Length: 406
Ligand code: PMP
Image (cartoon, protein in one colour):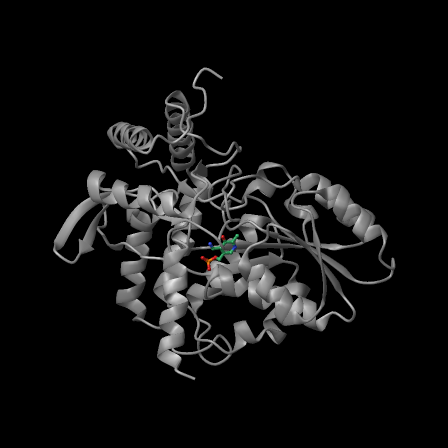
């Protein structure tokens, strides 16, 4: 086989479909978010970032940076080993306590990312619980799907957010068979929110464990940032709450929070936990500082809610089509991969606004979009410039608008 020719042909195919990904090379500048330096072939320029998952700007918050600096200076860079062998530092243990407290659970277990936490936890539960069936929401993230696949457990996919379909499927299973229901709270690309209470009712009626991914919700929802389940008073009914430290908390890492027995079980069997170097202690300390801050402070969440409402209202007023939802994620619908990429390029090159295009396979074909994530640090002027730019581009391409009056 001509391997190089194969690689190049595959990449050309992606380009032909408008799906070839080009990443903007950003240099984040502490204290300057949502501005960043955009490096290109002929120099660098300042851009406004509108698609970051540093949802609250905590990645540059002094409380977080101070904790990282202090721990870096006192403890050094790396953890020095896997959690099993020399890599369990005081900072990891403290962070796990902070996370267990955040979710009102007995224990928590840290991983190097949210992806790894889903992959390892679901992979282990699915592989090790004899004869378990995993019921997975059709909209679940790749990390959950890969974890379930990796486990080789029997899997059923239930219709997205459809607790009635889930109920029917659970009812059809042998009542003594172990069952695990895996779903998310805020779905990242549509920004829709699961009917968590109804799903839990169904799980409880059929004796199923529940596993919720709150990656796009922790830090952002609930009085202490415990996620949508905290906001709705449901955390104690959920078997496993999974989250990330890399989005609203602004750092890196993933975790599960659950009973002591379940966390200890995953800790003891999950290769994705056991056989990889632990997070640097400074990052664990930074994440813990971020969690502590957002347990107390509502200002960031309120600021974000205000910006989201303003951006939505302003885009609606000029007829830019958006997917409706009740979250902080604003999907601006384009519906064509080539247009989506072109709009993103124009925003960056002409307006210095960075919104990465979201194309298949991240979203279904025909639903290509720009995913806009307002943060508390976007200014009124940033919002004006975003809305004007999108409106001008919509006119230039004669893209259809929704009725502003509707
Ligand atoms: N779950 C969901 C729903 C996600 O969207 C993502 C990342 N985008 C992850 C898990 C993985 O989290 P992390 O980025 O911390 O690996």
